[in-house]
Image (cartoon, rainbow, N blue to C red; front, side, top):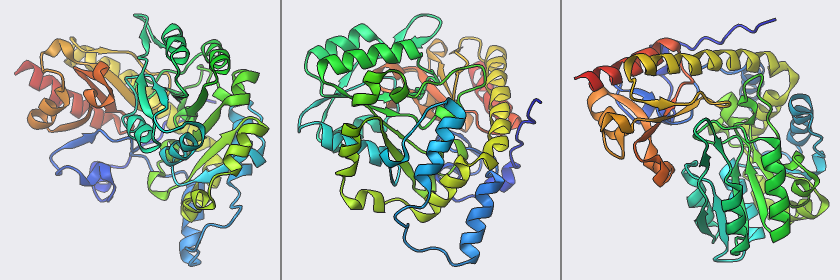
Length: 386
């Protein structure tokens, strides 16, 4: 049975929210920048949080709030990935987990590979952990983006200590192929490189596209890799602070076990409760409806750009609710988001923030009502025609 797409609340209701998306700009600006969804929470999440508030259950997070078992069940159900719950630890958010793992697997000044254009905090987290960023951009085949395996091998051979993988990739929405991940894992093992895979967008992979968890790509990946993920992106829980760090072997599990206790204490109680509810089967129907809505919007965006901004270049993403759009042909310079915000009153994410490869690009959040997307692209189209 085809799921019914979720419907977003009206703008006047959304503007009552107090999160970054709704408090950064005045009300005459349409905010399509930060990665927050406009849809209501999954009912199972709302219910567990309401119960906690009514019970005054607002204390410290317990040693085992159920997140390990919930994530293991979710991974098995969605990706046929067997995760040992004892190899899972929690913390406050994905980037926090990335920093803590990096601190244990590199020495000060160690090189850490990223694949730009990529999520801007990657560079900050590498520096926070004492590492040095090594850039190996994604390869553009003309039809898709792929990992540049030859470039990665050169970086590994030159002495990189670790790699921070974005899987699925933000901002392009690319779901890396199992063969590419397995080839990456073989190279990483050969050169002694630790791969940390940020898989926060994995639940947002569209039906018909196969997501491969890095640790499940091959035995080599499981031996040396880590995954860090959360329900926060898919289920709109960023403010509740909970993420999981996953090891694929006894050796990497020992690294997680050796983290200071404070790392796990950073897990928020509401975040743990909400993540357990998100990962439960009770939220599966909601996720199917969310994916249906995002599928409609990613295709609607293609139609709107073709109509309003024919010079734009856009590939429909395989996962997520973020669109990577090349506006170079409009002649609005390296950072067209600034012009669009000033003249069209639409807030998009700045392309250059994702690396030099982002010059002339914007990232558009299409996790909103179709009418909001139409209005936003209509405003930008009017600016282009002015």
